Length: 253
Picture (cartoon, rainbow, N blue to C red):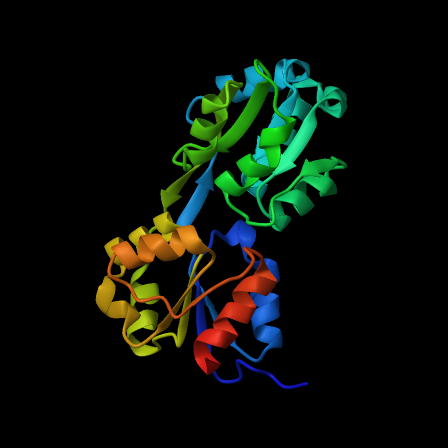
């Protein structure tokens, strides 16, 4: 089988909890993978809102997940509250195939998933199903985007947004800085605007050098453009497979 990334160094910047499958697929294409997580996933500083939502999960008509980490955090809170079985009465929606797969891995039936893996894409799918005064639980990252929440509120539904997790910049070691200097990557993968910001803050723009930059989706691509970073390719789907295909396009055009 042709290895389309043979001899290419690819920098992966996602949190370590999210990179195993991506790294395997890149290596399968012949890439030398440099895994340098720039963000660490942390529990909420105040866990009470998430715990309260889990204890009264049956009150919600919908639970809307925007990331796999949100699924994992809510399921853990439900387990601790002893209310996992009550989730069977709640409709589940997910942004993106990886989030949907994570939910299904917990035995949940995802009834709404957009073709366009964005918050507003999910809103368009949900809109015909929503009724005035529906209650929607939105477990999300503390610093997560607000477009979906705002669109739901404008529709007249009652949204409870709770912090499911937060991210903090990971410290970039001297060894990592030296590695970026002596072995600059051919391709850099960015999976969120925040990751790109942290890279510039901790490593510096010059560490991108002649690297081809890949974005996980249009939102991240737009943020990179605003940061003055040229994007060589955008993943068609926000999945490990989509990122690998985009890396190949970035190299081969």
